[in-house]
Amino acid sequence: QVQLVESGGGLVQAGGSLRLSCAASGRTFSTYAMGWFRQAPGKEREFVAARGWSAGSTYYTDSVKGRFTISTDRAKNTVYLQMNGLKPEDTAVYYCAAHEGAAHTLVAGTIDYWGQGTQVTVSS
Image 1 (cartoon, rainbow, N blue to C red):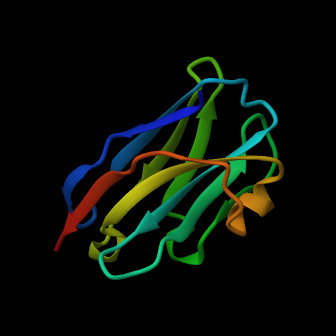
Image 2: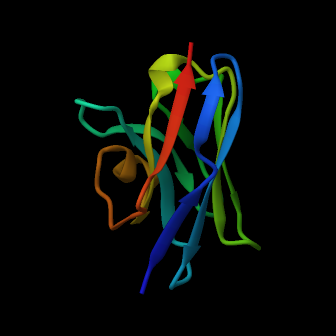
């Protein structure tokens, strides 16, 4: 059974940093793309970042380019989202996502597995 477990969320002041982690288990993820989505109150879930588990291109939504970095640690079966220069508009529940296939397909919203989410709150 596949499980994606996020951690690392919390409350931070604007300009601060957080690193989200997503521990993946239940299968070999070498053929998967991994990503992060977020959902703010009253808004739809939106794409944030994605990449192939082993290698390949990375994708970011425009509003986080230059501030957020997605990475993977294959030895730990963990996906990270390093978030720097946080802004109040980054406040949302952040979800880890996995798709067996290309990262651009995950970006388009084809998701096989979701994590339970972790809250990120950025105060002004």
